[in-house]
Structure formats: C-alpha cells, structure tokens
Image (tube, rainbow, N blue to C red):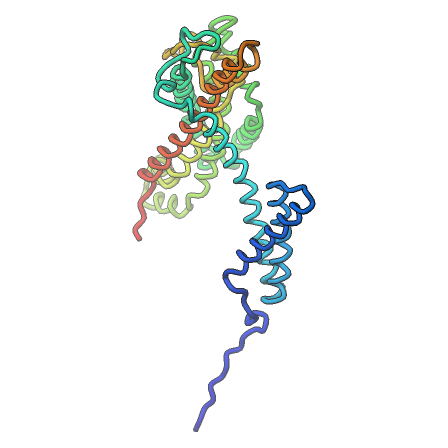
Length: 363
C-alpha cells in the first residue's frame, strides 16, 4: 500500500515572493539621489528639503514595490515601519543638532581652569574666570531640593497605590498633583519667595529658597513616576507576603519598593533633569553672585542656568569691542556644556544604583 505525501496547505497570500534584503536600502539611495538631482537642476537644493522629499518618495516607492511583490499586507507593514523610523529620525535630529551646537561652541573654553575658578574680580571683557561657583551652587541647590521632594513624593505615591487608591483623600491628592504638574516655574519661584519673605523679610535671597522652588516642581513628577512604577509590581508578590503573615508596611518596604527600585530611581532622575536647568525661579530667589557660597541658608548663590543667562545677556549689553561679546558667549556655551555633562553623569550614576538595588533574577 503506497501513500502519497500530502502538501501542506499554505495561504497564497503568505507564500508570495519576497523582496531581497537590500531592496529597502537600494530604494532609499535611489530616492534620495533622484530628489537631490531634481533639486540641483531647479537650483533650489537644500539638505532639509532633500531629506524630506527623499523620505516621501522612498515611502511611496517602497509601498508600491512591496505591495506588488509581497502583497497589500506586507506593503502596509513596510509603510508603517517607514513612518516609525522617520518619526524616530525626526525626534533625534533636534537632539543631535543641540548637542553638536553646544559641544562646538563650548568645548574651546571647557577646561580645568573654567571648572575651578569663579568670576570674582573679573570685570568687563577680561578673558578670565570660570563657573566653579555656579557648578557648586547648582549641585547644592538641586541636592537639597531632591532631599525635600523625594520623601514627600515617594510617600505620597505609596499612599495613593497601597492605602488610598479609591478614597476621597486619594482622589483629591491625585487632582492636586495633576494641577501642580502644569504649574509654570516662575510661579514656583514666586511662591518660594513669598514663603521666605514671611520668615526673613523682603529682599531675601538664599540657596534654600531656590531648593524649595525646585522641590515644588519636582514633587508632582516624583509622585507620578513613582505611582506608575508601584502599580507595575504584581499583586501576586503582595499576596504571597500577606500569606506568610508579613505586615502590610513591611511588605511595602521589603517587597514592593525593592521590586520597583529601578523604576523609582529613574523617576527621581526624571524629576532632577526637569528642574536642574530652571532659570526663572532661581533668578528670583537665589539671586546672582560672582563668588562661591557653600551656605544654603545665608546669602545669594549662583547656579549654572542663571550663569548661562547672565553671560549670554551681557553679550548684548556692552558697546565695546567684539572680543567682550565673544568671551561672554564662550562662557555661556561652556556653562551649558557643563550642565549637560552633569545631567548625563547623574543619569549614569542612577542607572548604576538601580542595577545594584534592583531584584536579581536567575537565568
């Protein structure tokens, strides 16, 4: 008795031909070449216009070619992929342009002398001075703002997720957190100034007031980020701890917070990145000074955002030689580069801390 092998049933649409793997790259090169040639012929060539029209021509061409060879479903998938990568590139271009501009303009003056000296005794267009006092002020004010906001924000998030998600108080807190998220930074600065005027009198300027202003802006970010991270912790972990007789507060401390540690650290860093570049509130409550002040509760403190603003604005002010304007601009760009590097360093430290304290999983 002989048997004939049965052929597997394959849908015709799924067994259609496939484009070679190099086809998308080839179509992209051809599209950009055609667009660039046509723009050059008509005398209106520019890189942004060539990129935009090239992406449009590529999307249309790859959609038509894929639809003919692989079918309508594959064509739509290729179009969606093209739009996704195009949106990603559109989002990355401003970021890369910003980083390149800051690096190009600030790298020349960014050196050890700039990082270790202040503007004390520097007048007019003197080619001297640095941003040491602004760096120290930024680190101190931001650190104290973090000390204020993180416990408040984290405890609020724990209450909203673990204890009062459906209570009237919980709903009220959620509403006010949403309102605080949209508060302009200048309003936070005015609030901190009004608060400290009650205790120290009119004209008060100190770093602690700047920390309070930044904490007002950080708290809603910490609450929202921490709340979402705590919600991602599986309920099975909580129930397993309760089944073993562990109190709820200990379950939150030992299980919930430990499981969400990496996300909580990321949320804190998002809040720090949100406020470390604020200028308006610090200009109001922390003031401007050319020398280093390590005391948060006594006297004015300079910060990097205010330093950048002051140097860049002074570039317009003096009617003297161009060298004065250039020096002020160079200091501003170098301070901006310093601020970006500080944010990157803090994010790197946060990732290391999150990796250390996050729960270990066996492979």
